[in-house]
Image 1 (cartoon, rainbow, N blue to C red):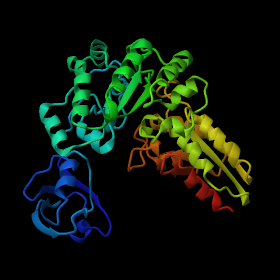
Image 2 (cartoon, helix red, strand yellow; image 1 turned 90 degrees about the vertical axis):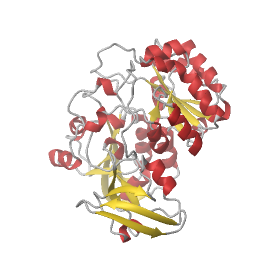
Image 3 (cartoon, rainbow, N blue to C red; image 1 turned 120 degrees about the vertical axis):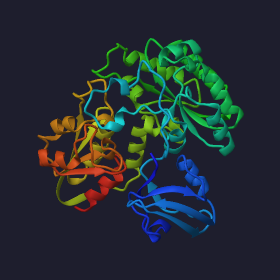
Image 4 (tube, rainbow, N blue to C red; image 1 turned 45 degrees about the vertical axis):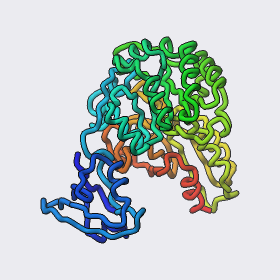
Length: 422
């Protein structure tokens, strides 16, 4: 898609120039833009000439004088202005391939675009990385990237990704290393494929990449009831073994689910370093609990207040801990209601995949002043759930007061809500 303006920041140059939603940025200094990488690079100048196509079709050329690092204040509909590089793999564990019809259209897009990895932290496999891509990455010294490795065994990776180019993973990772391009690595653990000795081999190979390797996250494969081929899920014994193997390598962390499956406590913050792969569920529960422990809680509320955390099954232990502390506040009652996934199946336990139907079924009989839900349940910058149902519709159906914590389960926001009753 072209560089379509989604919105402009208040008080920005773009607002002053009356650039508005629906306008299209055609060029900067005569150069067309492929993506936000080009935009960020080209906008760093004291003098610019931009070409804008207004929503009525009229084209304007505007000369701008500004500070070198000053942004124009334009928010675009997409980070990529040309066609997104598609995923050419057919992974045995692909989540997109096991989704039913009727969900948001964006959920069916299989991208494998290095630009989105750099700009938004999405994962790439490098199987479609061209020489031209590498030249641009090296020339602009982009990074860090997030790379789905899964295994460094060439034959096994071809089998898992169902793409002959998957065998070149170590060649590509060594290219990143030789060009001093940093990267994070993800491993989706599929029992019977890349666990046990194969995992040890992979982690040993990755360890040899030195400082370019920033972190490794191991996450369990997600298996829904819509999957055709049978994949084993991670059980307690596999989780324990994986944690044991990962502990031998300093940059490797297992996602929170492994510790829950193994019946172990969530590790301390030292285990997660700088929490570099939070979006992969690595350290999210520890961060929530640590954030809560830093807060100063009131001793008493002036009136009775009841709250319910509608959380994922994976987050139940963390919010039970938080609820036990909050329930010591006089006149405050806090409950925890994990939302079980009847839509995807019992093996899916994360908040980002909760549908409006499962949320409604969980909270319809809850009697609380407020029900707290994390923003990760909703599509970014919208009020739509995974199944396309709006937050307002859920409120209408349940007749409940839903409080969306903008920073997912930001306990600080919840405390601010509580303090209104102090």
